[in-house]
Length: 480
Image (tube, rainbow, N blue to C red; front, side, top):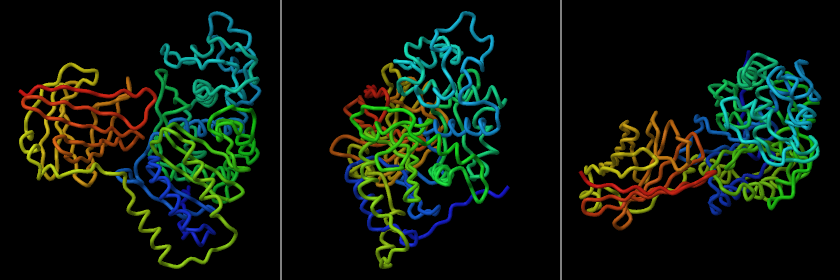
């Protein structure tokens, strides 16, 4: 099967003003919105793409709740293949699961209620209370009539994943592979699973920015790809339509209505899939455009506002006359994007760095499992950690990001959530302290640390850019 390839053209060739794209990049950087990547497509062609170092185009990135839109699409394929209908009872997929009858409203719950986040719950059931998440959901109390009220509910999406696997015999990711992922050319992705082996559904999918863009073109083309109708256009229309009011909200793009795991947006006809901390697949049918974004932002509304205010008006009918220097300026800008680097002096030139270099510090008991710390300062600094008995050597650049592939737990500010995989670090000396950043480049998370040295002691303090339950870190070490 021939895989889908995205074509690249100059913005002006697709009717997009390159000056506006530059303005958009300027604005997100001035507002410190934390973008890690973007791809803008018009007429199914990429007109602008860029990654803020140390993030790269070939890195998978945690999608968080943008995963929900892929699970919804798996349900669409199952409906198309007549494996289920939206009016099937949820309980009907779990015969003999419950020893006692569920509550009355659970018995009324349909597949469409899971899709529309209107299960009748007033409080989202807790995931992970036991190893059998489906049982926990089915035995939860449902006080309201299903379909009567919106409540954002990741557990509902998990149940869709379980239902798809129950009727197809395949995990959602495996079921989607020949139907969606392979035709779109989406490869080397992975999805987290629950203790029972089901894809988590509502989160946990990891893909590249370009994969999000390809998914967006599939949606924009109403289920078609390269002349093949993969999924019924009527399903795409229904899944992305307004089904229930989801407000009020202090953020206007979170009260425009909800579809089947898709959000409606302020501009007419625009919809999106999104995930925590700014993972976006924005589809603009009237403009024949898609914007894919991965990022680490606390407040997700400001970036959407910039898209509506700057990028949407920049899309016009026909080609745009644009001087070549303007095009070259945008191209250069997109290839030189980088997250801000720690400011200060080089460790190789700082007297305090020479004094502290090579000393090992035994760390007081802490929740992160760190027992030893050593800095070897120089043109390239190496941070040596002993974490849960394992030794890590992490490289830190000066005025550049340096990657370190790791397969062990690194210091994490996310309680109960260790991060694995590559980390990119950079640091500099400011007065008598060394400040460095650690970007976990498969996630939105970036930690900022400050190491302060005194005779015989080290204090390492840090904080995280975004998180559900952020906590600061403060470690004390005694020189050995």
